[in-house]
Image (cartoon, rainbow, N blue to C red):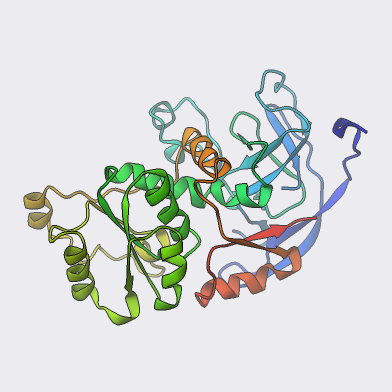
Length: 323
């Protein structure tokens, strides 16, 4: 039986945020959406109350909407949905390759139904084809964690052979960044995280590890300078959970203009990578250069997974099986 002959159900299950701001989700039955112009529906694969979350989804194209005849993806093809679910493609940021800055950007799981659902509609020209030899559970984390870390490393300006510091090196983003930097981009990595993650971080490719529980800001900086030949690292990569804490916005501590000027240092930011970044990072994964450490959980277990994340008990990523 051809995939095109598979009957799409009228309803499906989805995980929604029932109490935004709290670690709480529930499973609801929703009506299956029908793809509109230039859209497609995928199987399997949305933060308002009732919002379906998720932004790293892999599934199979089940139906194409009107106007998608010339799309590069077809029914039956495995594709991925990223944090940026769609852009206009014509505003100045889009034309310059800054997808996340699109004036009408659609963010998966945030006012746009996300990937924690069995069927999802998305922009046909913005989904990413998945390499045939890459398992779905290995591809999914690449669609946000992978593309974001890759984009950050590229934006940092660090070159092969140079030292980079990765904060949160044993986390979901961090362990991918360590592998991409060391194995894919030939950088020398100093990983910073809780001491319990040292072996994991070193196994991912870090040459040196700093236990955050044994150092303050000053001694951490001293250790980095010492490790990197007395000159310090070429780049320090800080991911969102550390770089953008919750609560009242605060300026970056110790970012003194004079110090930045006399050292020629810069502070750069990136929300996520581009479509090309996604294709490239999936290729790294398909070639075995980077391997996401994952475990699979059921839809009913998502709230518990979020609790583990809050308590910093996770190493790697958790993939939700939506079947």
